[in-house]
Image 1: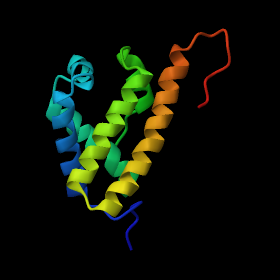
Image 2 (image 1 turned 90 degrees about the vertical axis):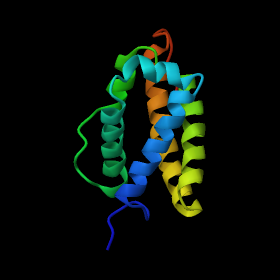
Image 3 (image 1 turned 90 degrees about the horizontal axis):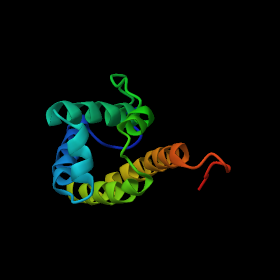
Length: 133
């Protein structure tokens, strides 16, 4: 019995991450943002593979804090998440079977929405309530 959220292998996760970050490096908006923060692409991709393996396969070998990392970068904006998710969805459709791609996309969109809201909220003027959309 598999404990994964959906039917996928660690190797498929690795392949998606590699294809995705190859596309990110070429992206006109996301590429420069990542380039300012990623000095070692293989190490970054390995860390992201561990993140997704933890989220999907319940492996317990990721110990980062994505929200803290995105906020600490300082130049990650809420509007970066839409092109990130669009590019990620394109990668999923190219690499995986449709059912697996849809399942992973749904998870990525939930995580992305939380990160976007966190980035948006921390940078919002403090005179009003938090934005909860």
